[in-house]
Image (cartoon, rainbow, N blue to C red; front, side):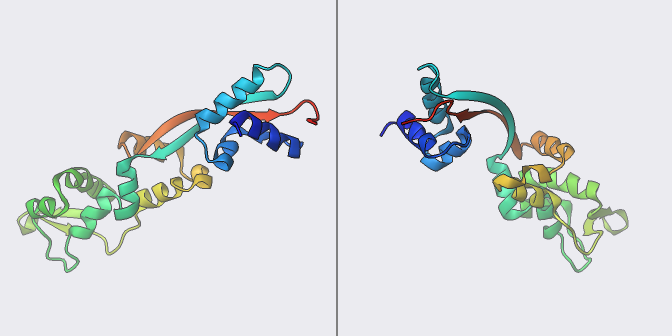
Length: 183
């Protein structure tokens, strides 16, 4: 059965409006294919009525997905600093966490007040607090779940976008209904 026929079949079973993104999930099809089917039904005349809505969605980048698994760059750096108060050299810390994570994570962990550079102890990097809450990981984890997009503040989303942890996508969603009873 073709996609336009599936849509009409579903509409004949229900008098409710149907949204294109939900159809894509239900039919396990790409959203753009569903939109194409809706447009072909629109071209037939008064078979269906549609309304268009533009929606802003946030998606995790590969780096954002990695943060959900391992923790934010700053949390990884914090975790690599010894707990015993002895500290570690900045060079050893960067070697341990890797240059890419270390570069971003070090400055963010300093900014958060999680670590410090002890100038009295040969510039060793030490923990400044006993424990942390990784808000970045928590926010990105909630973004990865479809229903939780409103739980992350816009300011944080802008910061995560700048850090290339998330990307914004604009999607046109179609709401369709049938003006007639299909027999």
